[in-house]
Image (cartoon, rainbow, N blue to C red):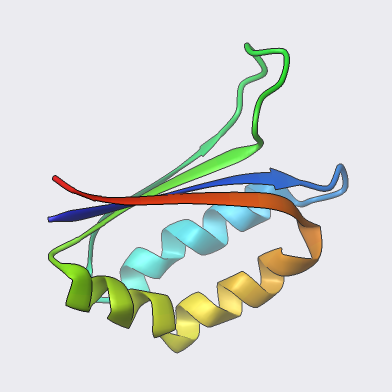
Length: 93
């Protein structure tokens, strides 16, 4: 199993709830996704990131399919104008 973690910092006007819903809906569109969750920061830390995505797929092949999937690309294109920074970690579970 591969866990794909992405952390975003967004512009102030980013529609984070809409972004979250679009990302969560990918589970219904991409069969390679075994698990997906999206967390919006609750404001505890004084210097937080805004949103975290945790996705699990079976292997690196499925991660590549997910990354290139047209529905995933649509979500990326929606998010792109709001992104200040993005960090990614992929690791075996």
